[in-house]
Image: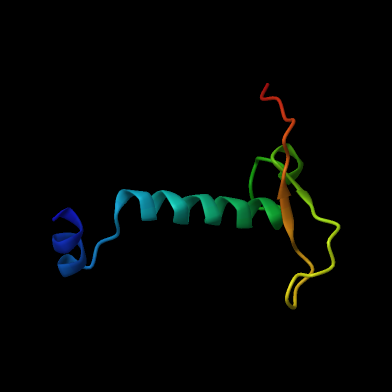
Length: 66
């Protein structure tokens, strides 16, 4: 029911807004526009299949927050 009125009003769900914010933050980290360094959470993948671009990220499994 909630999604129905959100769609009628042209609004995004909270989950969609959070996903979008996460993607924007990762973009900023990749291009050095964020205060958080990309190496904190991600590393570039060594796989060569990226469908036309050279930036494929892999989530780090061993990171510590200070």
